[in-house]
Length: 402
Ligand SMILES: *[C@@H]1O[C@H](CO)[C@@H](O)[C@H](O)[C@H]1NC(C)=O
Ligand SMILES: *[C@@H]1O[C@H](CO)[C@@H](O)[C@H](O)[C@H]1NC(C)=O
Ligand SMILES: *[C@@H]1O[C@H](CO)[C@@H](O)[C@H](O)[C@H]1NC(C)=O
Ligand SMILES: *[C@@H]1O[C@H](CO)[C@@H](O)[C@H](O)[C@H]1NC(C)=O
Ligand SMILES: *[C@@H]1O[C@H](CO)[C@@H](O)[C@H](O)[C@H]1NC(C)=O
Image (cartoon, rainbow, N blue to C red; front, side, top):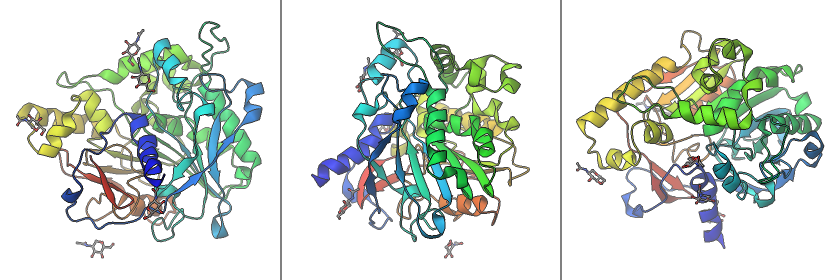
């Protein structure tokens, strides 16, 4: 039973994003790391039933859902909202398939595991352990941007991600979010983008709050220019924006200057965001590297046998990535933690002492916590210009390499 749950946990977080390899790894390959427990726990889903009357529904027409764990002690008026990742669906076939999974239907959503930045352990997660924690399920396939009224009778597919975002936030406001003192809107992978897109809107909904900031976890995908690299995200985003009818929610300040799909790139909307936001991402994020440099390249990185042309591609990717990031001259407004480890996302499985990947002896947890609480503003960039392999432990067991 427990074994099944662990597998479920790994699958929820990894397989569903279909970006990392699961464990074919040998457990005895754990070098320096000491075994540790995760302080993880399961939280039931809350179905947002009244969203249906607003037409705010998942791909299959079911109501949206989130998982909420209430804050305690000094954290009762602090809220962190995390929009879960899970790539995109870009055509009807994809979306129809997705509508039969928990990435497209709340009927199929199981209780969700809370860990990392959602851990309740004070020692593991000192800055956020007692906050109200909300994990918003991703079930629209279009980064919470879709808004198409009509429903195709043949497929019964709904493209309503933007309405889902509004309906979920409205529900949370009524549950206490409206009295928040501190708040964070965050999102991982495909949903790093909406954490930026809706950042100012979220801030405006919380006039009583002292501190509202946003956090993008491994969602800063870029539009590459060098022909050594593949510009895959541009056509992907064109398909997504078209299928989901996203254009109307994209910032006018961007769509007045360029094609809507280009406004799906964080680099083209970041300069207009007034609320402070923080970017956590590896320069060699495995999802970005697999798409832009070549799939299965993680095998070469781990075997440390990359070819010269692969290494040149990595250096070019890193340089284009650093150029696309917000400028570092005001780290109070734009903090960052950019490492060189070849993996994807950091707020959940990597947000603990065992899996932390320090840069210059600084961890994501410390740098982000200091930045959020206005203790110290940092813009950290790992100077390694080639990807570093990395090991992931779950509940004391080696689960994957990179
Ligand atoms: C981690 O292991 C402990 C026992 O060592 C177990 O009680 C706990 O449920 C496990 N957690 C997960 C998430 O599998
Ligand atoms: C839909 O997109 C997937 C990639 O996500 C692609 O493999 C497939 O061929 C596309 N199907 C159609 C009908 O365009
Ligand atoms: C449909 O989804 C399943 C996972 O639920 C996946 O394994 C399969 O490859 C998908 N099929 C297509 C055609 O995308
Ligand atoms: C590099 O390592 C990978 C993974 O072990 C292997 O598949 C590949 O053949 C190796 N390539 C070279 C050139 O040694
Ligand atoms: C790294 O940080 C830890 C704790 O923050 C500290 O104890 C240690 O001395 C630091 N090491 C170096 C080399 O700075």
